[in-house]
Amino acid sequence: MPQRQFTVILEPEEDGGYSVHCPALPGCSSQGDTREDALANIVEAILLVLDVLREKNTPIPAETPELVSEEIGEILKARSEDGLPLTVETAQVNLPSAITV
View 1 (cartoon, helix red, strand yellow):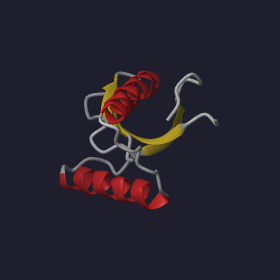
View 2 (cartoon, rainbow, N blue to C red; view 1 turned 30 degrees about the vertical axis):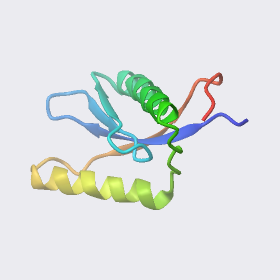
View 3 (cartoon, one colour; view 1 turned 180 degrees about the vertical axis):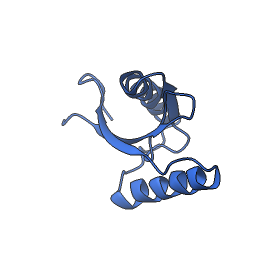
């Protein structure tokens, strides 16, 4: 089985650090003081969400470009409304190879 990847969206915070969101898993977000911390923390959050989905026997949602772009649009809209720079970044995170989804 191929290693599972998820697209995440990094959003710089006003006071430093990053918020990070996983569009394929609604409500799955985290943060970190550095980009690296935020990416490590979102992997932990993804693993926790996947555990809950498995326990509930719920299928893993499919990630689509439309889903990712919709989430980016929502984040940019909120940043605009808050008077923040319209800056976000996407990244791919890999789950540990022992994890099956």
